[in-house]
Image 1 (cartoon, rainbow, N blue to C red):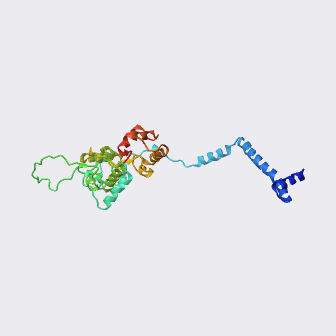
Image 2: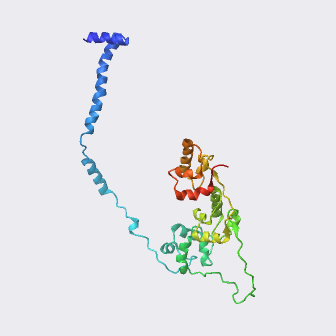
Image 3: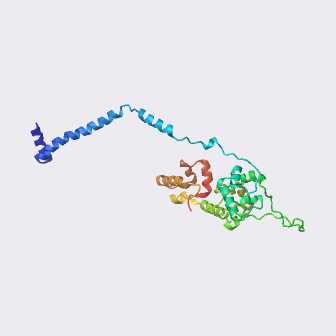
Length: 299
């Protein structure tokens, strides 16, 4: 039987007697490994696993784990008392509820011979929130406004005709004009202009709320000094031509929706109408209304 198998193997594969002997031995071993190993794994997967030892080790580790106090259980206690920002200590600022970075900023300002003369000087500090300032203002031991050098000497009163304050077009304003608004420095003015350029122009004053770092009080001041020309046409994105990168750079669209738009164009061809954008799952009615002024089908 073995001889016949050997002869058949030699004739079929065209190999020598030694190679045929090796193949006859190797084939059964291969067959065993092909069927036995999967059968063993299947049998092993059905066996119950004992996690008791692992559970004991986990319980032991938890028993020795240092207990961490939850900072939310002991909220920071804030007390209000009269203070002079020119002499108050860091500990006093902390008790009053000043953020650590703001207290340190006041300390650094004083160390460079800086001095607060009136209450509103605190609003000039970068990072001072108007709402927090209004809470601590009654406790600041400084005058509301600077007293004249010679209060007894009265200057003659002159009657000045009231005139309406001049307003400027927000879409034409440069950084020099914006920094004239109290509360806006070089960084914030650059941020407003950069956002305006990325957006394609403001179509509403309320869009200033989307600029990071703009305080609500500062926005109110901007609304009194600036306006949006009703005839202004924002820069539009050509929906059927814009690349994924160009679409994604717009503050309203961003990259997930930009990819969805270019994928839709690839699968269905160009948009026939702007409303076709709503066929994309990421676009709802509210968002469509918001982005519509900045979209165009063709140049």
